[in-house]
Length: 444
Ligand code: PMP
Image (tube, rainbow, N blue to C red):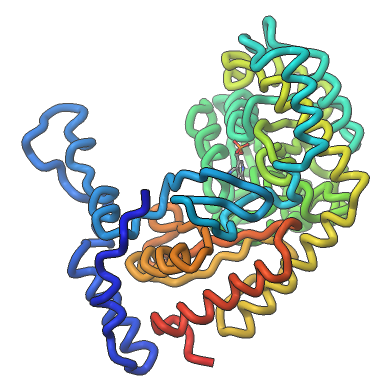
């Protein structure tokens, strides 16, 4: 249950100073109550000893809850497209990856229901031994055909698809070149692999080339990149990545988690958008965004997938994706392909919301990606704004350090084809009102 906001009166009573002064006052008032910058560094309280002492000394979530600005693990009681009910209150969700509105689509639910009734709630085993149903292999064939790939492996999550693939490919003498803003699952895959990983500056192609050059004597090189970065909504510079990979003899693996269903021909992703599909060695995707469900996959040449299928621990030693999810995703994929109007609507919504934020004075990425981070800066102000947005009926996500660099805290908003014009107008209206109230934007 969201606590009533205890600071609100104190903060509301701020006089109407110029925007930046008002903003500073609010930030210092909040900081008096809570040491935001050092919240994750708080030392153990001394009473507890041993490996668990850190848990008992970890006070940041409690303090944020006490202040009424804790933004995580909110319980969604109902959901339909872009609408959620939280704490008994209806809100517009701009904290969703349900880009094409497929998570609650009746045909998807019906396909899932039929599979549920036929096969039960789970596979009770790994794909490797006893958890491969014809539903899995059918979906694998459909994805391969959609992406023009020889073969595909459906895994239980996108996280595991990255982790399992990278950790089994990156051998002792190999080197991975990974964008600093890549998803945590790429980091984890690299961390458990025996090979070395070099992190290049985000989307900095000069730095990538510098790193590749420095390791030109290494035979096994792989460049790893998200195609759409999940926090910033930036698009990877695939044309240059592909060129550098050729020049320096590197393999390319892309994570199209936020590219699939959003961009490229029929929603095939960024590689398609740049017409570079044939230059990509490994295509990773997930079912937890545009396809509205859970699961992930890796598509590549058959010899490569055959190796991964027999070597990736994160695939072999975990239970298979449940039948209802597989059937729902298969139906969702068909709907995505046969109803391009969903992607068109998503693009229109994205263009509308970005234009609206831009006109208000917020900086937004000038691309067609429906991830629209609103960078606020200070954590205190960001958490406070997020709480006020929630009170206005807008459910958004927050990213603070270490997910983003310190003083780069953001409200991460994202949009779907299910958002209606009036939803988008309400979101813009609330940001405008609260942005001006907190001195984040000037009154317009
Ligand atoms: N890669 C990226 C870029 C992501 O954003 C995510 C999900 N946040 C994943 C991989 C992991 O996908 P999944 O949710 O299917 O585990």
